[in-house]
Image 1: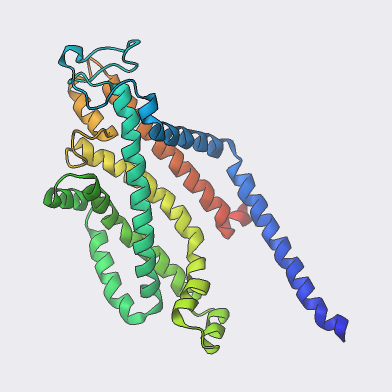
Image 2 (image 1 turned 90 degrees about the horizontal axis):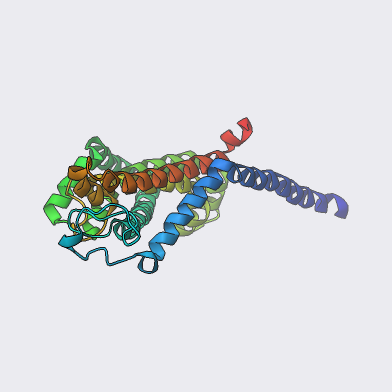
Length: 299
């Protein structure tokens, strides 16, 4: 009798180990593909130049020198100068900081706010009826127009840009989290926890929220890329960060009038912007393939 009673737990542990091993191996196999590795290298390089910008920059990015305006590539100015005589190379390095801060900030704020609202909307019916109508209303407004309106009302600043880009992203996170919660709230283990008298906060943190982590990680990568692109668009239109703050968007906006004379004023920051967004999207696709069981079965 003792052998029979101890056998099922051993079998369960062995089965769990066998199930977890293929998942880990599939994750590593997906992340080791050459597009993902190349994307990670590009992102690591962007993060490095953003952190080390004060050391790598050849001059102060805000220093105006009319005598050196619109100079081509030289030993003194690696990527030339803009219409105000500012070093383009230094401005691009500092512009990476703005892009990363905006991307990480918007992804973090959207995750925290969207997760909190989405869990409540998915678990409580009366909250769902109210919250989702508000989310539907926000999603009906184009995100870029809503961001421009918020920046116009509050004034141009980095914090305003963060809030303006976060607001349109929150409904997408809320809908994602709500869908996951609705699919697991009636699972047997959730009902068993309720029957045993598990407090509601504990139930949400231990049984509901962990189910949202995999899709949220993937969604955050797309939000990160979208936020960088939206910030560049806002800055290009003059509704983003103030002109004295280096941003890839306002570097391109200021250089478009001189594109025929010095195309690098637009091409260099535009190329970095494209590579960064493409790298984040490729990483997001890889994480989706690795974390989605349905995609794993197809591989």
